[in-house]
Length: 167
Length: 132
Image (cartoon, rainbow over all chains, first blue to last red; front, side, top):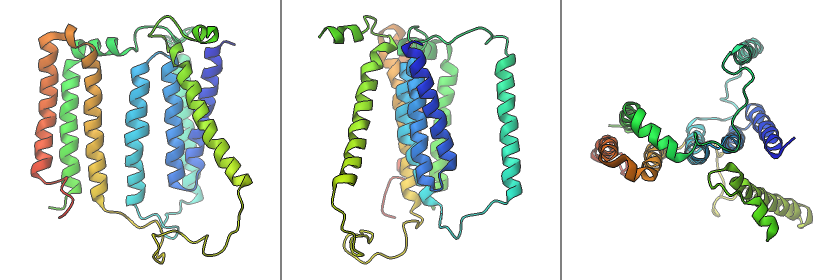
């Protein structure tokens, strides 16, 4: 087993364990902290795939900014122990069934995919994930989605102000 | 010195060059864990009811920490995220600045123009003004 394999498996184990901890934690603030660990592990995966820009952006935007938003949402809600909604055992049971079905769907999708058969991911080397290649693709081939993204940001800004501001 | 040159990959764009950053991250986390565990094990513990009380800047503590907070913080945070993502789109442009030429410039200018419209809207709506 080479260094890349060892790193891949340890990062995968870290991501899965922290993702389980997100769900298991009783305190929602601990869930958010475990989610940050998940994002760090996924950034490690991006670096293994030589997608360095994506790794850094994942850390800055998701682990940095979005997690602060999650914390604010948790603090905005009234999460006292007496007001916490209790799900019935049937709700939990059907939640497990639905989640398991989704997981088996994804697994069968990946196994049956003809494009993925016998392929392995490009590790460590490769130009496709680098910032220069990404910039060229973004500003030459994907200009329209890029500009539409800015319109999306504009609408998000207006929506946030309309919802968050009283008058 | 020779061990360091083995670790450094000749290709700048190889992810093997992030190995050192990973080691630094592990060492930083390790130092924090060792310090916290050591101070927990070695430090003296004399717990009295006054010491175990929540610290609330000297005043008597009342209620709990689960009080809902003002939505103004959330508004500032969500606007920060939007402008944060805007700045991230500049990095790929800055790397390819010369090659994209004027076409790229107009594309980015249009992108920024939409943000500027949003920014003027935010300022006009006084969304960032703290006092009501």
